[in-house]
Length: 92
Image 1 (cartoon, helix red, strand yellow):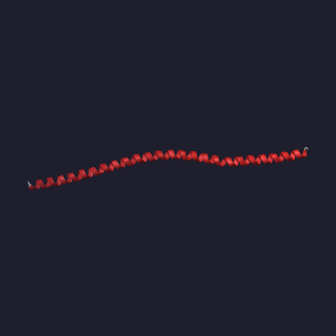
Image 2 (cartoon, rainbow, N blue to C red):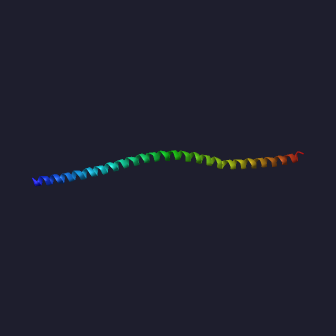
Image 3 (spheres, helix red, strand yellow):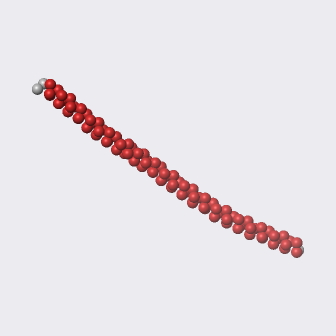
């Protein structure tokens, strides 16, 4: 009879250990689930930022070309003015 009681005590201890380990696994599973949700949100934010960066890059590229266009317009106007002055001088 003592042997049955001893085995019952060992089984109860094992059951207690299994329940404790199961609780730890449940906490770990909840943490992993929370982390997966956070990663999903982070991925969505990164996609949104990717679109914003693309638009900002396009705006910067457009702004870079504006001074060049203005400079070309100024040079073209100066050349046209010089050519006009030269032609005007000859037809005077």
